Image 1 (cartoon, rainbow, N blue to C red):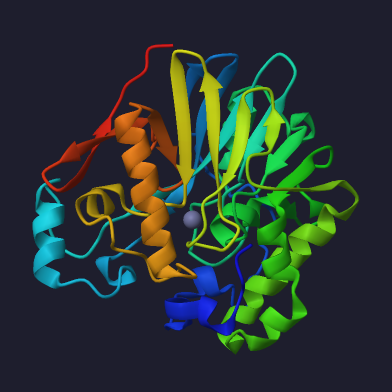
Image 2: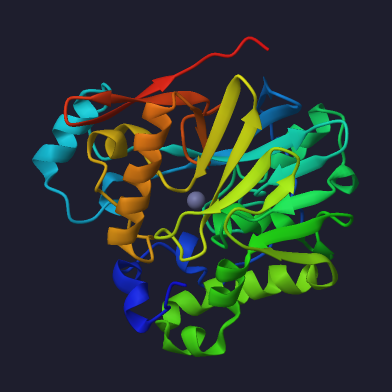
Length: 320
Ligand SMILES: [Zn+2]
């Protein structure tokens, strides 16, 4: 079991945008911003219809990726035709539907007023699919950062009133451990409070799982630590089509396939996150898995291929 220590906070103690520190998160009046549009795209993975739901676009910058040399960034991003510091990335949530399950993997930033307008579109995405929040029976929290859990709560508590909340025991322990919270820099305490608010909203239907838990037939949770200590990815066994949902192992797919050791400032343990990322890339490339990620270009389905001494992201269109 991973030991959580003060050191675990690592580079996350940098002056991070309020987005991730959770400093004074405010809940907007409604989790459905006026004028929002829905962006959804679905693919069949075995018994599941897997639909990417766009919550909004994060204005990421190369400055969120510390420690690298500007020249290496420039060269890596130039391969993808990107110049300059602006590297916006989506916040994606994913809906998994089968005959017996309606699972939402993360819920976006929702109505949290941290990153400006334009977020909270997951609910509109569900609506165009003919679903209401009441239809979700399982909510998976891949990790407890605001861009994944903000949409899990609304003005009246749980935004998904009938859903069980599934999270790894490690992730739950980290964010609810009073000792760890006490050691965290003040600027990060809001993040703990937000996570605890979400856990409290689902307290009577909280399911803590371990590495390898099968949460529905063919849907397995794997703990891939580093970004957070209980950070989870999902493997969906669709027979001939296998999907590895790499969630937040990647924050900019162009940059981090070219420079796979490069972390983001929000990684709890950047070195561990890098190891985890490279293991996932190796596996996805070797096994020719489809991947999808919470910050991979919407709608996020693609593959990882080896390129030179690193990797490359190959977007994939799926017909059914
Ligand atoms: Zn994220």
